[in-house]
Length: 246
Length: 258
Image (tube, rainbow over all chains, first blue to last red; front, side, top):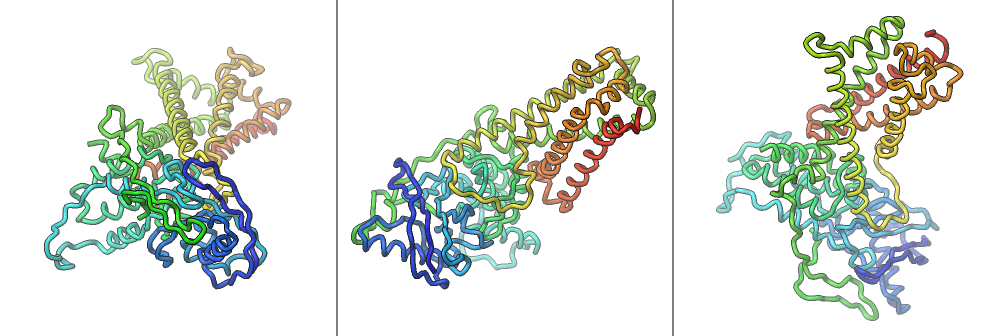
């Protein structure tokens, strides 16, 4: 496969960025998107250019490190797939592919396609602790959990914190991420003691970071590699309103 | 979880260029607005709640308004009596037009708060994405979510015209001192077909606004998880309102009601 890439190049956090065009030849359709970028970078290095910086770690779709907006869609148009699990066979030979970083004020560009997602860490930190016994492991059946609640909590807990929801949201909102983190604890018995204070602290931190508000467009859940449902946002809203009513 | 928590600047280098970005020092924790007075209304979720509650009030108003309009099909007298009844609600306990004026004031407050929340959230969204995408493709189903802000603006412009036309009679051929039914019939006369056309466009815009808005209201208030049929119900209510609001003016324009 031969491809034309239009890639966002930005040398540092405060440097102005621009799109640069590269030709990549002899790409195997079996390569992942990141392997294709590795090929590009090898050639850039050999020709003495600065390689394109991008985030990646496990390359198994479970760590949440990779992520770029490919042809206008976070993680590319393949549904429920991280960038590292997106393969070149989904692209046409000779295609032009635009690659941009997540764009949101709370996610400043570090370099090229790498953004600083520490804002997510601070939202998690604002959530504080969960009151659980930290001694020896309890019996698995010592706290009964409804099957439906366990399933919904697990669905929410599959969030890998990649930030695609923020990237896709027309408002730059982090509601799906924050809602997933709030919901996976608020549906379980272990999450009840701090449920409302946690929801309030995390939503307030989300606002403080400068993320936009949710307008229920559903763009986030459509690009989420883990398919976190919009229901989690309703759960977050409910907990937040209850916390404020107290 | 993504983050750069190393305490000193580190750069991994490969031959002639950096393959990974420099590792940043952790940024200090930003203060939260919680605990401050008025924190709820300053929060994005608080503004959304204001939007939902005021929206709900306006939807209830629209349903009653539509039912009232349909009285024109029972005859001009029925419509005029209904208009008079609105002004004499709770008489003689309350003076003429008391209840109606209170309701009108409530509606004005709802409209203003709804717009305040919308503008404030739009500004927030604007600040959250200072650098726009070169290419951006929508992945969510549903076009209605993308016309909420422009749709809202269209509805406000229509509202101004609508009040000048049928409430104050300023731009109505019959003027202020006329029976409500006469104003309606003169206002939507075939010779003023462009008024009817503007009305149709605006009402369809209201319908699209509500198709997203009614569902969104339940989502914002955290009730959407309990009612799975909300989206179809929102679409149905919107469709009924559009048909109910379009029937009287179209009937007048096409001469069914004279």
